[in-house]
Length: 217
DNA sequence: CGACCGATTGACT
DNA sequence: GTCAATCGGTCGG
Image: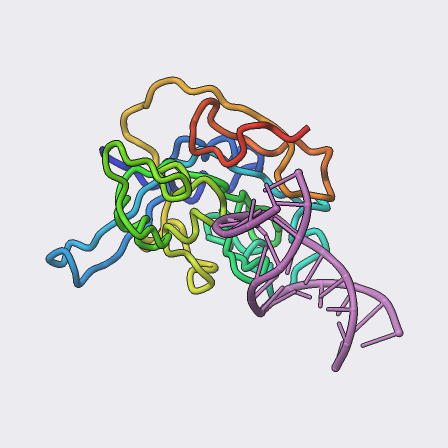
């Protein structure tokens, strides 16, 4: 499948619009590389669930202004904001809008497309899923159906905080050929205690890699 | 400086 | 369904 990297202009738009636009785009982790005969390798996943975090949004890390932790959110759009939470997890966000506006889109789930063995290894799967043998917590759908799972599977941690998404290490691309029609679902955001009123979670309906099947009220 | 807690996950009753 | 793990960010004193 031919992939076309999204240009900077994609990210310099209203955040909710960018969030919806990210659905069915492809998150790519590119490894330059020594292995695979110098061709490098890549991990690819189709984005199926996102959440928008805006300014004057009490749920957003940027709500109380710029700090050392969230400074990337206030940079130019088209960069990756990675934050550490619960003492053990990382989550990935796509920074939107121009410099000094602290907004971003959280990538909550992707559908594995390429590099599945690599993702499984990074997620600590002891064995590969083989035809017939479904192994509950270690099957395909648990690979990337959550924001911290995506980071783990894609090898994204604090070292990639602030990386330019128009670069070659991590980027987002659209398929050159249009995929089949898909319906977009919308709901309140997951795990948010302030800003419950906003319905800024968007997901691909009936996709089994969406993190929560039942939508919060 | 100490206390509180989180845009989560996985293990367990 | 419940809950512990685990630690840096943030805020109050």
